[in-house]
Length: 336
Image 1 (cartoon, one colour):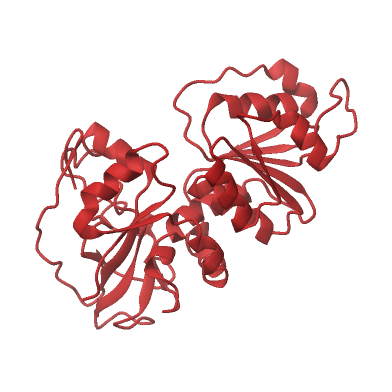
Image 2: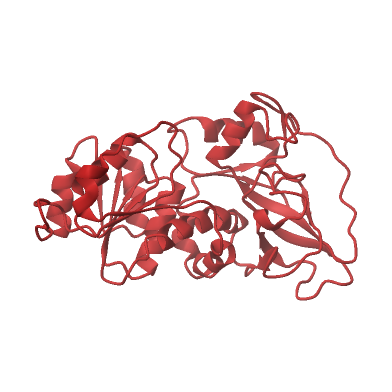
């Protein structure tokens, strides 16, 4: 858990007591998110400032089931909904975190708090369920239609998950933009139709080559025929590029966290009728995405770059916080 600004520690706590309506989950894997680094930097999240349990991307196996709980059994493999926990969001200010041996689900309901996954799915892949729900919500905000064209900015875990999601929804051609060569190579492996290194290529010109040129609308001529834009990068250049290149009627979904204000000339955008949607969390997607994850787990598995045992959790947190050092770090726990 976070113990002070910039500091974490492994803390011994009592094993949770299981009531008749509860389920105790033994955690077997938990991903590390960029927000974990933020929580560490600021010293936790009130009201648990200085004592915030970390980890909101957990997967595990059921260790105990209360007598009143139905639909689940000891030994089942499960993924959790961190936002549904009654004692606060798991790993994001709540009383429990997924970087723990156990998480107790109080008043557990299958389908609301947790769902089972087949046992052939590796735990480190199952732990992608939460971030892939974030990616799925970002895709849903685009309202994609079969046959459309799309571009995803950012080939990190969310951008890669969105790429997979767009292809599974029938988008005909998906381009991924990044500045890191190995991330672009991975984007092709998960199903992107093309990639653009924006440090070396003109994005608008390449999109015109790949998606054709859109019909002129008012004064907006020479725009790429790209229908959908998704920002999973969070840098001003992405928004500037989209606003300058979007054709009439295009849609933009912003899932990335922008840390600096961006100036937007709405007068210049008026004739574009660009729709801008923001995506936060997963209002309905947390278990909707599980079916995709299970059906295509080998493709999603490519997102995990660094599984690290819990005995080296400090190294895992440092690795995840170091720009360019790893794509997706997942902490793994031994079986009982």
